[in-house]
Length: 545
Image (cartoon, rainbow, N blue to C red):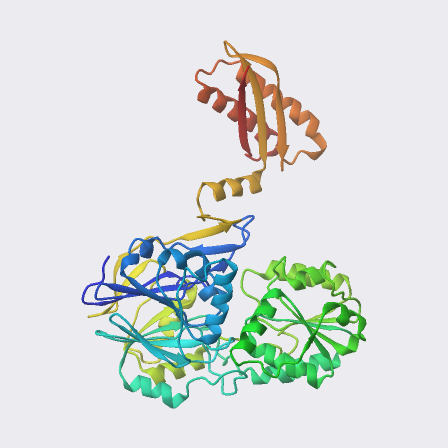
């Protein structure tokens, strides 16, 4: 697939799912990539923390890729850069704050000299082959979130990235309504738009309104207060700095990602008035009512600061009378992990406060009123919903039709959509998928390793060692080892019966070595199934003596 005299759109991630955003635009034989994100693993990937996009489509066409343009610094938009950027071999483009976060990632991986990172001014523009790209500042829950106005010979695309309407943002100054109307006056062919909150009828709300709710909760607390929020939410950090001053509390920060965000924000001109922070030891020696702690881990991440605090594995200790405030939205799929931490806090008589009890969070994504406003400012000829699961994308299309947008199309990862001429139209389907980061190795998410690990996690494993002499004579007794087989009270009896089954199969004279191994494997698995109702992974080692 080489773009002809046309404008194409292809999502390799982020359409049909929330997270792992990777979008391609094709025109006159060339491609550009917008964002290169990752997502966090769920229980379907045992032993895995990070899930990455499969970029095989564009890796096979890397000679036609001109560059990677980043809209903002959230992990679901930049998190996969260290794993793919060097191999793709094209420059990265980002505004100063986002570039600072990316530079830190590249430095950690020793890739600073291998990847070109080009810094673009806030609101700046540049050319990439047939693409003219202009950064359009929008409000979001991170500094320097931008839409992209992408100009091509076949029309303009307004790619929103993640955004919201906020008339009182705490960091930065988004583009005004008049500026957005002016973009609409230029005649926009397509708007590729965030769908996350399309089911919400109430506006997302301004970051400025959160300060009052947080201040009220912190002021009323009698003990230590921990506030957990997304580390990248620099606007929330700004708010918490003000809350600490207003409630006469010293501020302590717990989490490497928070340290990184603070460092990059200050280096790029943000959070200049953020209070000086205290270390963990000082926080624990001060009177409880004089400490406010900001911690990572509000989504239940096991190794984040909040989890370690909740389970008593951190220098910060909480007890009866202390309060933990969840100043973040609960991401679907994280309910069990978050509940685990809340239960641990409850056992220590620590009070928890969420957005259900107090106004301590606002979303960074547009609800229906904001979507409607953007439609009428930009006035696109067509809408392409992205950044949502299937239900979000279809609802977004319905809502856009109701609001008078003439054309729209629901696409998901792998769908090639021609935007012009005569679009939108699906013209093909490319293979897409997921990769996993397993330790230091990148593997297929549904490859042999992960499928076998799922089987082991679900059913356990039996290892069988059999010694065979010449003439296929069994020597001694087969040795059996088990892991995760539910026979606790009957372990010894099960091992005896499994060894007997292996011995009987070994004496059967099954023929070739492979046939013999398979005969033993099936015999032992049948025994395990009879005892447990499960079908464990059975590994057979034949030793010739």
